[in-house]
Image 1 (cartoon, rainbow, N blue to C red):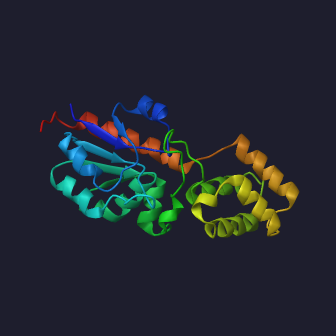
Image 2: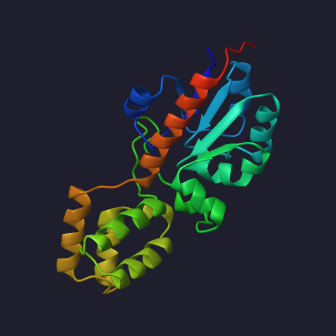
Length: 223
């Protein structure tokens, strides 16, 4: 059977991931981790989460190097989407809407997907900008906020330091800047609590399903 190693962190819980794909799940990928995955006999590597600022992020050359060894590398949701958008021309497989947005240039900045999280539990603390965009678009469609308010909120959140992007702080600042009334901010807070959305989680699930499909097609491989 093809050995599958997946680097996963705050984008999706391990329990939800295991319900989709039986794999060797490891913490968010850092520079140097892929060499160890290769030594451990990986035939397919899935990159979902990865270090951005606190540790050295996985490099382009590392990914290309393992692909040259015949390893299939699939990316989506977070660091995986970013790297896949840069390396799909070399054979990395990108999955999901975030990958497509990076690939098309609709998303550019790394901090669209950057978050802070608890390193012990993997629980997400701050909210990635890409999820804020997704959540606010839904709020606009459900007429909780107007299109003008949505655009102003996204512009404001984009200007915040990524660890500060938590909804209570976002809504408080929106009221302070007169983007939302206190009443509208309360309504939006309730909406987010009742209908929480995560594009990163949706793309992580799609990435795992793609890996499952590829692993079922792959012939047994030994190293």
